[in-house]
Length: 449
Ligand code: ARG
Image (cartoon, rainbow, N blue to C red):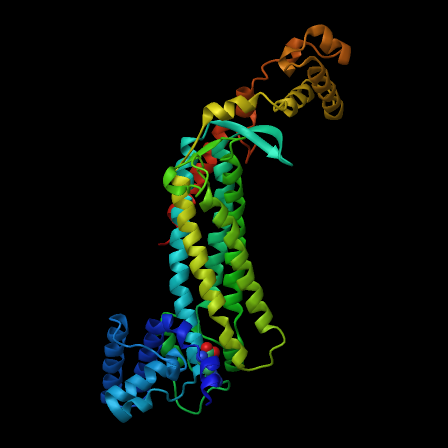
């Protein structure tokens, strides 16, 4: 190979992060070869001992891979042969790098998925803690970024809890479909050797061997699924990060993000910027890009293996690293953020937050909802003209709008009473948020970890 080709062709600089998985796959493979009598027991033992030594040397930084290694599979195999001699050449019997690289990625991704699931569970536990703390604290609920209805802060937390719950469930589904054993698919068509793919599946804790060798070496669906999961979850994180950024703005001041999670400005001494929230919002772009990259690589590729597929790793690794770091930083930032109730309370009087509750209240007294809606609309107009709140309108002013309406009919329309009364299943009342927290906690505790 021309030097320029060697460099362009090599994946060693990015696939060496899977060295442990490559060695695990090789050990399972040679264990099976030994059991099937394809290599002798003694040969099997020498190969495994050599592989374990190489694992140790890589971990200790004693092996430095170069472009000559091409990829992690060749890098480890050539060192094995250097170390134990000709017997090392038997390892690659009934195996191809086409199935080998699939084993490595599936094992590596499986390990990373466990970690990401743990991180998501930690985030959920922080959310539950905060939701409990702010279960009955009232804030402004928005639609179209306009004051809409009063809600509890615990309710907002539990909204995000549901998103991350779906992320966990989605990733768990992906893990289930991913966990099949490609080893033994070989180049594309299986082998004439008497291998036992069920045994290697068991040794590597895969559910079962994949069904069709040709599909196996051509398939990157599990990486694509993972990238979809990561994209959706990053989208959730970026939405909350955006809310953090504006809740933190001087105009809102709804929250105080801890200093340790803010940065300063090189010129403006007074600045305390929510850079972490903004970076989280920004990093979602990388992960969407990673998904698009692999979808585009896979598009239109014929069966079976094509070298295009080597381009399946860097974007996957980038998404793993980005998603994992983003969940962790978000969970810690959330933990270190408190709501400024004094600031929020100042906003609760604005925007007629209780208007819908009053209309519902009228409807309960027999006024058809459409009419109640119109009456309250007129009341809001009257308030705007007079510069007062809905509860300040006099009997005369109410009667002028509709004969049926009196101050007495209005009843208790304080923001707190309105929120407490929204007890419909999934609603914002503290009692209902309490139920959501309980159900959420039960679900989180039920997860196997
Ligand atoms: N480094 C390659 C990859 O990651 C391994 C498979 C190479 N197979 C081949 N037939 N050239 O895809």
